[in-house]
Image (cartoon, rainbow, N blue to C red; front, side, top):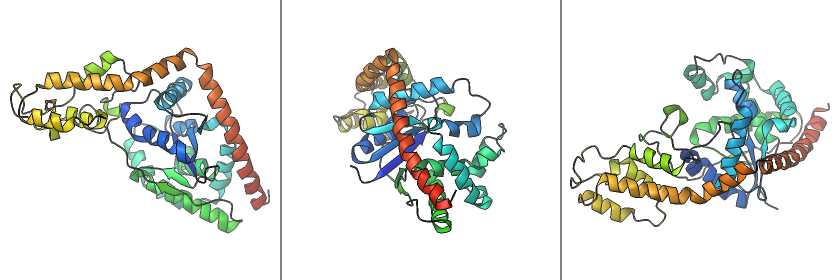
Amino acid sequence: MKSHVVMSGMRPTGRLHMGNMMGALTNWVKLQNDYDCFFVVVDWHALTTGYENTHDIKENIRQMVIDWISVGLDPEKCNIFIQSHVKQHAELHLLLSMITPLSWLERCPTYKEQLKQLESKEINTYGFLGYPVLMATDILIYKADKVPVGKDQEAHIELTREIARRFNYIYKPVFPEPEALYTEFKVLPGIDGRKMSKSYDNYIEISASPETIRQKVRMMITDPARIRKNDPGHPDICNVYAYYNIFDENDNTKELKEVCEKGQIGCVECEKKLASLIIDKMEPIHQKRKELEKNTTIIDEILNNGAKHARSVAERTLEEVRKAMKI
Ligand code: SF4
């Protein structure tokens, strides 16, 4: 029996990229060994900003879950499920929205920021304003006490704590106040050196074929001062070198730094070696992916079992909630 409960989710955005793998996913794979983990595909959250475009949501869920499992999430060690398969989230969301002051939601920094960023979309909706309550619900319904987050999501954890405190004060203590779980993980830049993101089109998918990997590596930004092979290089400003630092488990980067600085290796050769390194690292993940793609009933089974367990835990919490609220 693991003593702490972790909850974390991702919107179903389809196939994930290597930035997701090196960041959140690798972290989840580690957490599943030490915590009772609930990893959820938050499809209702996807509706808060994308309610008009739902035709590919099911396929996006499937592809994302295939990536989760290929990278190392093990359904024997953690619960993997879809938010909308656990209807208890909707009931608790409604109940918590009754006690959440509007001002708490309006002051949420990501709310204002996203309204600005997504101004081309009509998201001035009741659902979008209330999405932090849905997030709080996802956490509190499993009584999660640890939530792996980045610094940009701190405000949501604080809001979840405030909602839990308010509920516990008005009725009776039911919810623990969750804490943010900050973990160090490697940040893989996009091929242009900016943050890797689908919206910047600078990403490499986890499922990218060896040919696509080679092609993307060739597109990476290197030291612009290097014109000829024997020009001394500056690996610290080179994206290819940043990738070596993350992918090279044998830590040959010192050697590469030296030969680059002395102009003893050309960028083309260096890129080819990096592409081979990435292809080798991804090989077992791709094998697993292929097996799962051939037999997607395994994915359905994993999601059904995960939802079954999640429903039983969520229902237990809701029984306490209804009793505390006398309804
Ligand atoms: Fe970057 Fe490699 Fe070229 Fe040096 S040799 S600048 S590390 S690609």
